[in-house]
Image (cartoon, rainbow, N blue to C red; front, side, top):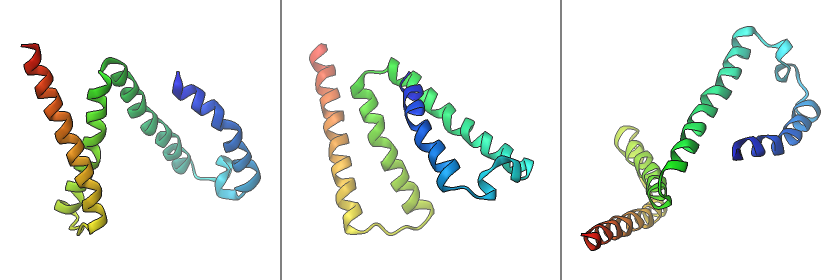
Length: 119
């Protein structure tokens, strides 16, 4: 799969970094507490499982639907930041999200047009 290829491709780079550049006591699992090592291993699993689920879903969806979901993520993060964390959006962010929302509107209008044309 693509994820295996990416992981194998990055393995030599990560190994060189880990054993050559970041050679310190905390970077070796034998020097860490067991709880930290378990958390680090769990982080890999917690990161990989959603990626595998996304890959499985992506193979079953039309590319246009998948693209629509890619636009929803940033919008939800924006709403979360403004609503719950009190972030004040600047002009640059508003321009960016305006492009995202225009793209969403175009996608929805195209879907409605296509649906009406079928019937």
